[in-house]
Length: 166
Image (cartoon, rainbow, N blue to C red; front, side, top):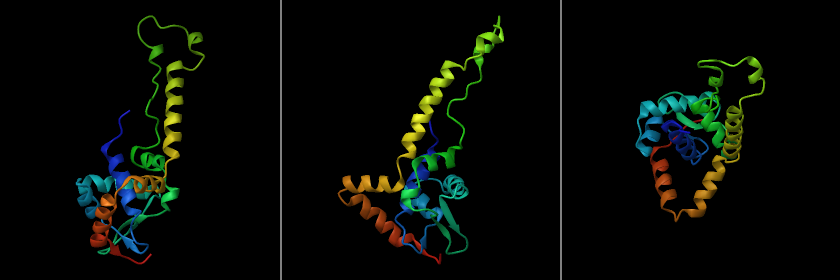
């Protein structure tokens, strides 16, 4: 399965926004700068995250983005579904019923075994993503970071976050 680059950008952006002060926002251009990605491409994904209720937007010259929910209440599945949409990765088109010399419908009463296996895999994949929160990602990073990653992020936030009334 291949997820778009937007998923990675969205997860990193949400994780970074978790470090904002309670009364602060971060602009899309600042998020894009920090991650070295296109602002216009990132904006598309930030909008999807906002539409999904993961991010809140503050308009105006001091506006930007912040989390709409606590980091513990945002799962990787929430982010993936916001960016990629809810459709399953595998879509069965019943090609077993096509081609020359088609068989009668009686051979296709049971669901396609391939589709059933792929849906079980999708269910397991989604369950795994649902079990990982942004807060958990941050806690895992804290366990392995010698301080350099945190210092880089904090220094950037100190310089670029905008104070905004909630």
